Image 1 (tube, rainbow, N blue to C red):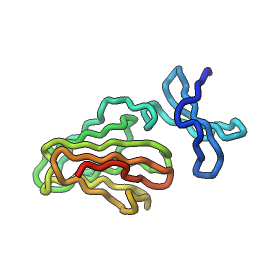
Image 2 (image 1 turned 180 degrees about the horizontal axis):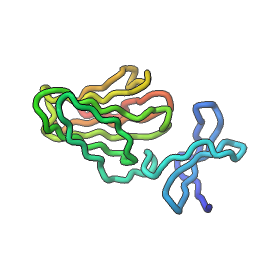
Image 3 (image 1 turned 30 degrees about the vertical axis):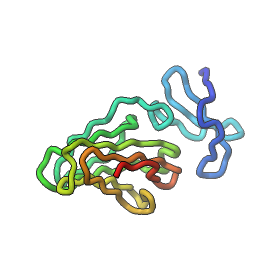
Image 4 (image 1 turned 45 degrees about the horizontal axis):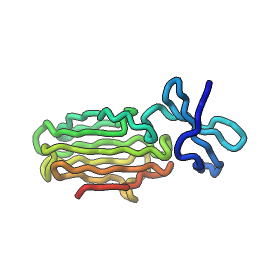
Length: 156
């Protein structure tokens, strides 16, 4: 399997080992090796370093929820139900260290139709269990440090 090193080149794993990030040109996936050459983790194409640029579309309805598990880095949400909350559960930050997700919505989201972006299993988003989107044409971008999600960009 031929590989090439790609960005970022100096990564530290959650257990403290120095890592290099490699890309498999055959399937577009990434993997990391520790300093001894042992493969530590495999990441599918589009996990945050190589966006698929094809949004994962969600038709949100009140009092419903979705556990997000797509490889797409962009989540586009439209609210199609009556007034209420929709909960989007993010994947575990610990399963996707260094992944970036963009969550955007259209004009259908407002103070009556909220999107609750929620961390799972005790993880957090900026130290909180959830982040609320309640305005039209809004969005956030979050990044996983391997233990939590951090909001790195938000449109207010």
